Image 1 (tube, rainbow, N blue to C red):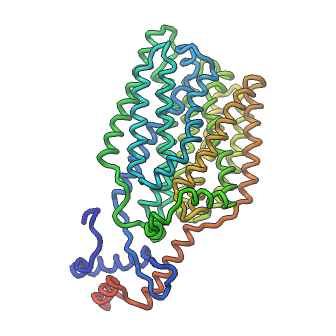
Image 2: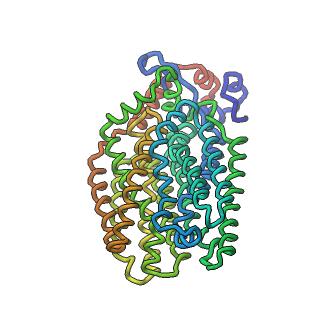
Length: 498
């Protein structure tokens, strides 16, 4: 049975009794009413989970990885690029902050495009921009061509705008109600793994040598590897990435599909979201948390080098530790949410632990023991980076049936704004007063975010929609026979019903 086949009446007659029992259970669990305003005569819509869904989310994770790797590619060896291009530390900081700045003006047209054209178009544009940016960088490996390498980074930052809002959309369009949080975590996982590789690989590929020709050789190798990977992923997306499954995975997604395009207004959706008070609180708290993570990641090389001179490679390894721990946190949180649906409680606990982790990291950074920094940074990353998919999924719950791309876009827009503010402010504080006051500055805002998270009203609209659909399906199954369900019942023997 291939991905494009739907269950039909003729197939039901040909299946054995075990297949029929399995299908009956799937129908009862996944089908729901198509017309909520007519509860006595609803029509059940078929739903189905396709194996291809895992290929789609993994491919997305791969090109998200390639893009996010480049966010920190310059910053983690900022002292080396400062020497090669003869620019200031603040200029190199902008190679990371351009990812944040670009997102803010472009997110609204991109989310509009996602709503109007769908996942495949956005995936193609994202990988095209990412591929183009990597090849521009290949042409920029000369000390007098810093504007060219900045242009390449700008192209990659444009690609990021098309990427960040997609995990929750892919999860909703392709995955069942019991696995959406896990799927979203896998989508975010690729972004985090890319950042991890961005912390680890550049210090290894580009050693801090004094000869400019030798340094150019190492930088060129790094850029060629990135361009080759980006090109391969672009080709894969062209031939493999699919818009959506033929049948929706859940009743809530079936309901969302049933809304006629002419009845959907992007601007009206934005207005409704901005009048949703719990979501507004989440926008602010998400921005505070993720903005702190962006600042820590961007300035990590500078903070480590200040206390541990000559430790560029270990600075990258500490960054890797932060993100790898965060990836574990993301997956654990995603699985936990799918099993418990405790969105607010989990979000609040993770936020509070992010604050505790930041305090411990700030207090131990200047002790002179690098192994301690590895441990405290890992603890910080587990909670702070693990918060990313929580925010996405909580937003979808609070805003259903609004577009997942729009809600994710607003969250990310907030994160970019706070990321720029925190990175610039913390950088200035570090330069003037040292790393401890700079990290205390972030702790203050994490405390504010933790308190605000406690005031978010937990209105789980998507979960409620799925529960209502299942309850209605169970009532119909117990009282009436509909189409295929009736045929299943007719074929069951007394022993199969026992």
